[in-house]
Length: 394
Image (cartoon, rainbow, N blue to C red; front, top):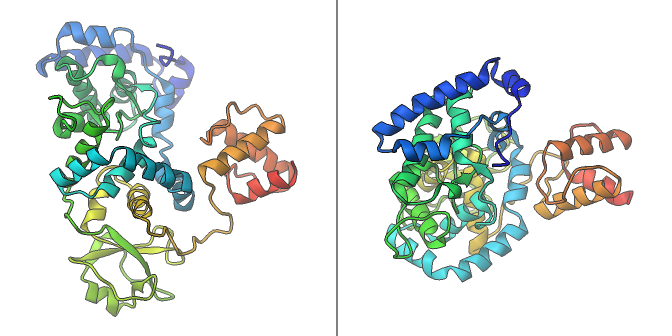
């Protein structure tokens, strides 16, 4: 497979091990023995794993996860833009039957199910290019952390093939092992994947109905409260220095006593305790979040991700997005605007490849070079200032 690229020098630099390849093959052989105890035959294992080699780019991706490194305003600008909302409404109309049946079966509202689908794979368009056995074996045998976790996910991926759910060539997804329309990890696929289209099996890669039902199943198991909201945007008093975070939940009367109000000035509503989320600090937008926010959080374990799901679900309902101002004077860019940045850089001779709206290291380097030429700080960030400068100097 053309994805099986291996650079000894780069890989050794990343993981600090000169004999990386030999150690990798020894690790794979050890996993083969464990796979047999999980019901994976030697023939299936060898067919999938015989030519797999470690990939240094997987380790690079491990060290640069956008949920934890991208500013929240940039993260949301891309994942909850007008294009995502309009496409989401069209996809909800197209798959209304599957969404309605998933909502009825598991008690999770269709807007949240669709929001997960939109954030995870852009409604099935971007499911990932990595060959999972390669990515997961790289992580299981060479990652600087969580090797046991990725080993378990590799074993689960092999079990999916062994039991006949999917052929090995369908095991393509993210560098971390998530795959399918709504990006389940292999172990989650085995545990929570369900049949949504009535064909008797779960196929989260090719069946939209299976993916949507399985996502609703995941959220229900994560504690989703049927008929309840995830939360809403609020205002906090100037100089607020009290408790915050989704885990620091208090009753609404407590938050009211601290001066917290809805963004429109109305009284706080909702059932159960809520946490006060301030993802950009006291000077940025704030949200009261309830149990359903925690269910969304469990899908990826990052507040930026859970907020993207939650706010996109509101937008799909026809409600407004974030109304408070982020504490930054350089606005985040939508996917269409990021693509425009790339197009304008290409016109200036920067060899950045295709203009697709996905900002990688090569585009960031080009942005930084252009910033230097026009007297801006060379941070490589695709923000409003760079776009405005490129537009002004076409």
